[in-house]
Image (cartoon, rainbow, N blue to C red; front, top):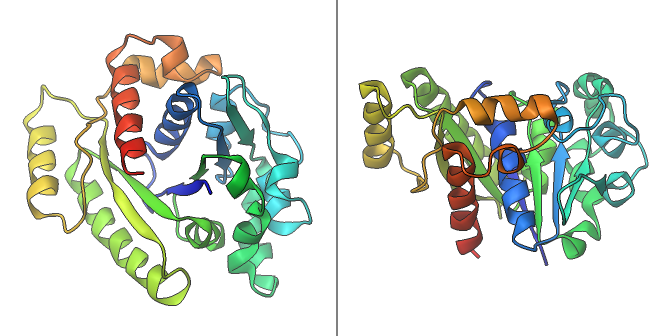
Length: 252
C-alpha cells in the first residue's frame, strides 16, 4: 500500500507548494507512481505543472461532490507523475464542507483505491487550518512541514506542531510527523544559520538533513509550467530537492 503525505504548515510563503511539486517530481523520476493533489485555492501547484486553473474535475469536486480522487487524476507531464488539479471553486469549500456530515473524512474516503495504485500521494495543503487542511491531515499517513529560514516562521511552527497533536488525539491517531524541512535557506546570511541551529538543537521534532536553498531557478520554474528538475536539473535547488526526495524515500 502506498503512503500519503500532507505537505502542510499554517503559515503561507514557506515553500509548501514548491516542496510538493518538486518532491513529487523527484520521486516519480525514480520510477514510483506518484500523485500530487492540489488542495490550495490559489492553484499554484496546478499552474506549476502546466495545468489551467479552471480544469475539472478538480480537488474541489473530490471534497464536495461525488468524484473520486482516481477519477480526477490525470497525467502531469513527467513520467509516473499524476495530478488532481485545483480550481478557484475550492475557495468555497471552507464554507460548504462543514455543512456535510462527517466532512473531515471526505478526502480519506475519496482516495479509495488510489492508495494501492500510487506509491506516493502528496497533498499540497492551503496555508490555513480550515476544513480543507483538516481533510488532508485526516487522510494523510505522514506530514512534512516546510519552514522558511526566518525567525517568524519558527513561531508558526510551534503552533502547527500543537495542532498536529490535536489532530492525532481527535481525528487521526496514526498521523506521523515525517519531519521539518528548512526552505529558502541563504547560506550567506547569519540569520539562516541561526534558524537552522535553533531548529536542530531545540525543536522536539525531526529535521531533515537536506536544506533547500533560496534559488532563482526554483522560483522561475513555475512560470514555464515545469518543475525545477526539468528547468535546470544541475541547479542547486534541483539537486537539493533530489536529495530531499531520497531522504523521504529512505523513511520507508
